[in-house]
Image (cartoon, rainbow, N blue to C red; front, side, top):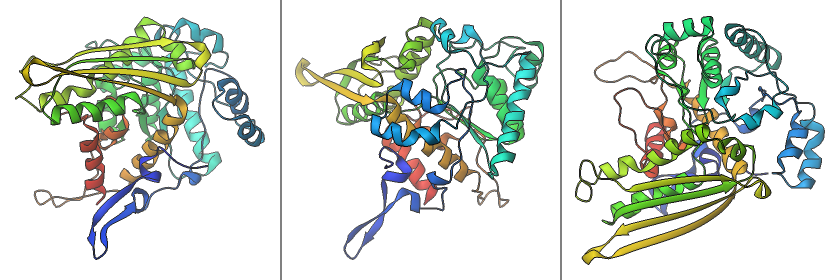
Length: 395
């Protein structure tokens, strides 16, 4: 086994220049970090399959490896989860045989009990909760419903419209556990963000940045940085895993489309020589569900840029990857980096009193398609600027 694809476990940082040239060290050695082997896992799922059966159904790992893992995985069974059908695709109903009953408030309370039970039974020091479940449709931001922490908590008590991912966020925050959203929907409605700030609990997201979008943020940064005016970006994907099945529904696809489409905005805005105030590339995102290809996601991108004397330059890229295997090391990085941030305090010349980071962990931007940032803070999507942010803080 290895940790290829992990920023912290499989990449290096240049510390400077020594007598023999540049000096590089593993990212994980910059500061004391949790080792992945020391992480204890538990979780919830609307499907009752134990992890061994789920592993076989997913068909991601090679069969010999599945056989080795089977006796360990079959002991792990997910806890009952929150299921509100209107937030995910109707085709997910066939999996939903492990769901919580009762009112919305009762379900949140059960999630809180689950967190406490896991922490006590496992003996871990900290719990960090990550949403790795289905993409949900977007929620409307409604005054009196989810615009403040008090209104959000009241909405839960009254059983009004609150998404499952937001319910998990509220339960985690109330238990003092950091919460990371790995899907593109707007889990962190204003009330959830305010609640996290009140409780001084870290939140982060949104949407794991693994393959096509990561490449897009690099390539457009290169094109615009080279003085080429990118005018058209067309991204086509097809995949056959359950993520693709859920995204075949229009409302869930729309959440993903928004997440994928905003990734070049700051790069474009950084070059007023090429782009006017209202000028930006045409950007089209297509995702199709093709069951046969399974977890092997196919991504095709076409980038068309204007060049000198009215010419055009078109770059076409085809990318095939195992979707889950790209996301897994990112999940580890998010948990490990979040835990590290919980142990960091700092002071400034203006304020000599030591303090922690803002509850919205924008340092996680490198790992997310649609970075969550504090209100009024610019969003940075350019990949190497995001990486530099992590490097500079850890230095």
